Length: 163
Ligand code: ZN
Image (cartoon, rainbow, N blue to C red; front, top):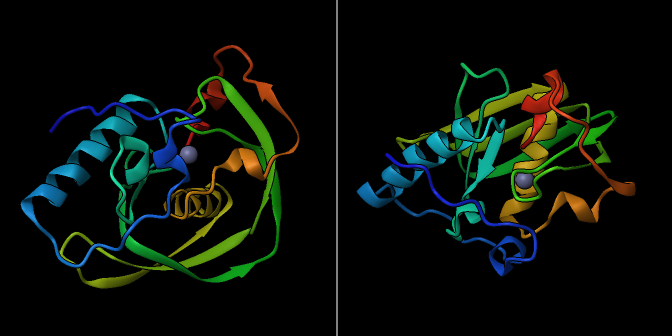
């Protein structure tokens, strides 16, 4: 397990469509462990493989700090409603912007044992799922920001909302 270097906006891996995972390997299992470590180390609520330079469809999300989700080859199968909120990204440090996302999301994915499961999320979890799945298609939230990208306010309780 190790902390990996998080790629920053402008790095072309962040604008590349990632390939699906066909089978679990030691290499991918280690990548997932490292992604979780890297996310927690950076106080993020989600991280996608391309953010650590790996062009595979793998996402880790934990919006509470004690409920990690590993999503391999995730596919959003249902959305409802709308929410508008400030969003951040570990690849765009110190910045945030207003983005509209669905209020509810249902996603289908494979877990670490390559078994299919579904995850439902509202509020921050729904937002994190959309944000991270976008990463796998090379889409940065900065392309969806309404208005200007803003400087993050000095440290506050909202600091944990970086994805
Ligand atoms: Zn991000």
